Image (tube, rainbow, N blue to C red; front, side, top):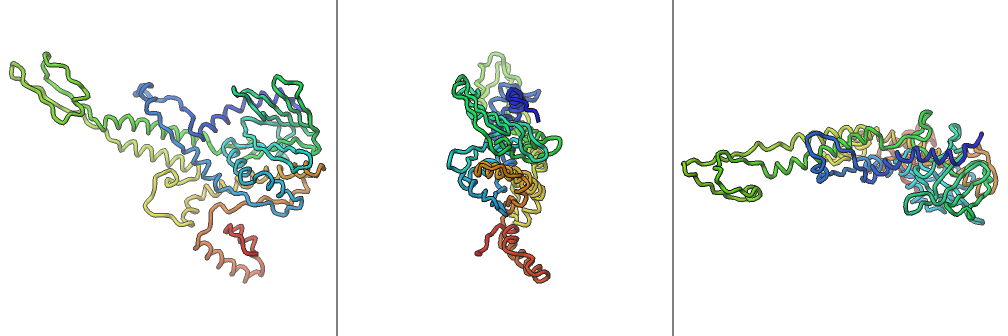
Length: 410
């Protein structure tokens, strides 16, 4: 396949990085939505700018449940490579970055006489040309370092036979390192890829961002309305033109006001405008929460609308059925990417070009999405006994660990 070249990949990264940066801003609750509305002036709306973390909740609710356990049938001993690369942080970083930006990249490097090193690179700093059959890149590009102004200071161009490093304004330090694996040492880990979107889909969807923006606008309007709700507007009719101007703040907070009759014996009449109700805003916020919960597979409890009755594990699993299915899909797609990382890391460690089909028996294993409670343990135990009575040895310790996430003594 003809190489596209580093200039093409630079343009591709610039084209797509803005979407990734926007989703990271949504996740970190720093994204400023465009001002929408006809009745509230922009300068007042800015004073009541609301912040909502529903998009972050939608990502974390799934990311926290995706806990990588091990590689089953690890014939090539790839587990030692991951154990040497701070696995508690590495796997969580890969999963979180993939859910936010639809994919993340793992840069594999090696220092002489050491195990390969694995570095997670977010999607707004890396891109490439993907092979839709294997999920590996045919050519890759990554920004490894940026200066204080966000401009690339160290770039890497990954090909099947070498990795090229380019230093900004320091061409004498440019470096070439040969690649013995036969594939670029930049591996994508993709969340929910398909034929239309080979680099996957983000957990922060357009629909989810809309519902969060709708809820933020509702909260801003509620905050502004609360000012009038706390201090209702009053009026005076029939006040003499010769009367001294009244301090509006004093008229609002004073417990007693005195008005005397004028020379004709007339007296002013006091009144108060109808206080706006806060109930419509509560209903609007709940409607937005219901839409966001349906989009992300959460419940209203997850978004702060707490119900009276606590839920058991079985009830939680039933109410989070969409979240469970999304988690199973994420385990399959992310597991394929991690297996590709293991494949290339083993090739680099052994300085040998293995064939990818040799790794088909190696399977990524994940912890159950929902932890088992006492009732579930009892139900699974009874079921295992009955199944083993019907078919001897059908349920073993490994199967039980996959079901309940508890490792036995042996």
